[in-house]
Length: 143
Image (cartoon, rainbow, N blue to C red; front, side):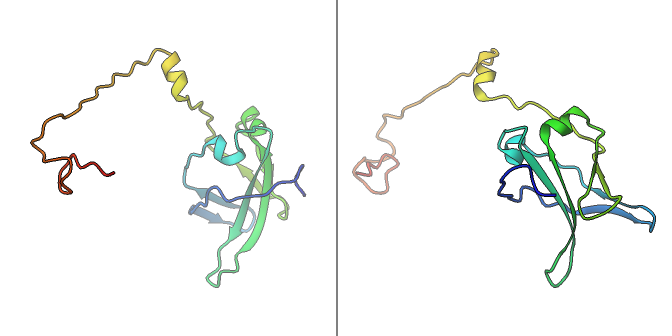
């Protein structure tokens, strides 16, 4: 299934397998929990597609593509219990056991929200650290 637009895919996260159940009828894989920024996944554009690919690792470096899933952040956010069908694997589905979207506040949002910062600046005018013209002085003027 081709994407809904022209995309250049870039790797954002590579996961290790936590556990697997290789039952012939229903193989089930579990991955370690991780967190990603929406900015990293889709550049902050929540309607831009995200692609998740599954590979079977091989020692010779020729990893086998088992399938992929395309979805948008808005689609995943609308239904946290969504099951997405993999392309290339009939009956294979991707589901999230824990999918949380949290807003990450900017520096200005903290300031406008009432966060106060104190800034203290100190200037040392003593000559106890050496002459400013001496190369070994802490006050060396690198001109």
